[in-house]
Image (cartoon, rainbow, N blue to C red):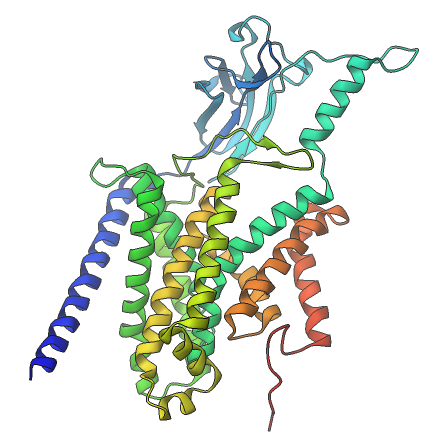
Length: 456
């Protein structure tokens, strides 16, 4: 009797916990939607960086930028902050962005004054960066390049050049983020057979909710991104459990086919995407914290401090997930259900409990992946949909239903995407990853870590 009473209390406590986290998520969206629904503008921005007397890179503050429309009328202006960052919110259209050279500090000049003003075309939701390079250009003499010219060319090349090592580092970073997002997708498929197209919206929701806590604020109260990320992970995990309890568990009990579940997941993907668009707006946004950082020059490549922390955190979390799957009781149960659900159930494993835990962990990791993805790119209402194809590529390449396959497959996809820009245009880099996926699956249809299965 006491056992039943304590079990009943635990169930009630879990339900209250899930309800509280759902209310937190709703409050976050409601408080952030007031300005988002009418937010149809675009943005032009930049970061003005110069050098001090010692040659160190510094942000240039108090410099005025003026945006004029096609009629020549001023449409907006901004003054650079202490770190050199500036931004102007504008309606969609074509603008001339002028740096007022009279506001530059003494000793700072434009490297290319003929490119001032710069023309910018904006569509709804755009967030475009405009570069105004500082420094004195050195013209090579007729007798050959001077030492000064050589130094200038080398500096420009080291900052803006594309190198194999730099792209490898960028590919590792992208692959780790994709792996963070896709492990839940792979485990959900392994334990239930469901190909969840709404998983990308869990990534978007994590990024958007993090933006609400960190930038928009709830009732005027804003959190630093780190505690905001902890809350986002908890909320996403709880909502994953509620989603499973309200939708997928009843469908499993009624014997719904996997095709029907697939169609339902596509419907929820579209629904969630446009709900996020309604509340969040179509304009791309960014977190308040960790946006403007000077990159470390590490010789062979450059890396911002936030990117290093991001990669280390991703590795720690992914190693923790792998260790949990390998050594903990629940992890072994997850792998058993993924390998053979009927056999696992016959040995006494509570399959529904395992599936619930998979939904919690998978959705929580997707929310964390959304935070990390939002740190590297702007936050957009369809960012999860765009990365979903890459998640499917990583999961399929590694082997459907395997956590380790999702990890290594995602890293391979991230590396290939970045390194492919050495030979193909940047706009086509995702296409290259999918071609690579097709080629590998023609040789090994089960993926790198998948198992052969008998058909028929």
